[in-house]
Image (tube, rainbow, N blue to C red; front, side):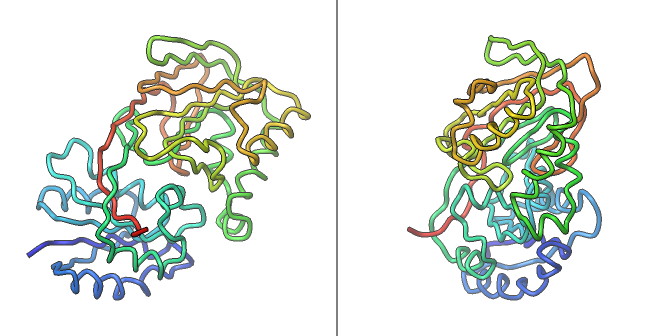
Length: 295
């Protein structure tokens, strides 16, 4: 019999996660799965559960929660010979990975997607010794994005990040960065460096409109040292999908990127606190299979 593991974060989605578990169980049992449920209680539980599913050759893992839960779940796939198919029921406020795959943000509709017979092979990124599904940000702005309150996320969604970002950009200074990518280099002062895998970053689906989940590329943005006026124009470019054309933004694609600085800088990874520099990033093409809606 096929085996499926449901990994749930009961604190996601205003603590609604537990309400949806029975619906997911019923759908998966109807599809012939033997189902187990693993509930997270502390950091890295989802990683531990997913690793168990790999070791025990589960056929499917379903992540029920936000981008943080998904980030932890996919990190159970690192260096595993067997990687189960992934199902996603998004309960967070942003849900970039689900947006990029057209998985409904409404939980009930997302649960119905698990009945789909369509599986899409998608890329993941590797940053030092961990995986990421959506985005890595470097700089003091990355620190401020990690501190966005749950209340603001709930009320403002993606605009909570824009609000916090503008506040930080106005008061912060740039940092020295050295960025090596596919044999080329950029050295200079930057307020923010962003690496994206998909078209949706922080809920803004126009930041990298041409990016796709299976293009085998890291999409990279260097926001240079800018004044308050240019901060506003950068924000406008972000909203209208023309960020890479802004005169104070350097855009490139790569398969491998190394980032260093003479200052101690931290990172934000898939909306969560990340490690300090230095970073080594690379694309893992066609690394996992994900259940997506039937067209």
